[in-house]
Length: 255
Image (cartoon, rainbow, N blue to C red; front, side, top):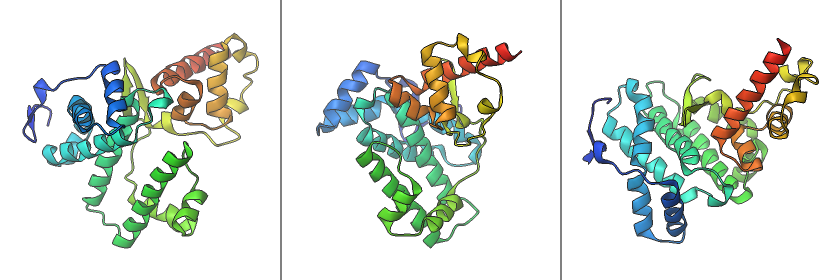
């Protein structure tokens, strides 16, 4: 895939890249029903799809197939992106594209999951997306279970069955050299996390208010970096950079 110039009849070497303000203007038009703006958004973000499918080049799948599936994820991202959240479109779009590609790979995996199990999982995933758009936050398993009228245990089992194991250190997105990994998108719900087990009161005195707020939201309240970004009004990449910087300051203080 690395040396492939043409995918699905598209010359990838000549793909256009939209500027941030162009993307925002087109998103507003697209979400108001402008089909031409939507087409421009799709064509202007094909490099984003390309960057994602390169990560799956070792799976033995046809790159044309992966590119088409990635484009479906891109279109879903365009249709569901909330421009009021104050985050870059790519920050939202990349996980959507990755999710679509992973679903495709799971369905074509040699380890078979029963049709009924997959149906339950995908029904739950669709309901989760609907509830997220409706509530403006990620729903709980209990809320999903109530919506689909099923036991939460059955939903958890079904979702676990279709999940493909990944490394916590697998990169998800990179913004100006600040790489976000899978582990950065996982909330810490453990009340006895390492931040609470070390003597940090003295160490955090030298942190600024934003750094203190981010660490509190991340490790005391168990929020993901995406949730923190939405709450304080910056990008997830900025949250990741500030979080890592604050932790490094604390580690230096603790010597």
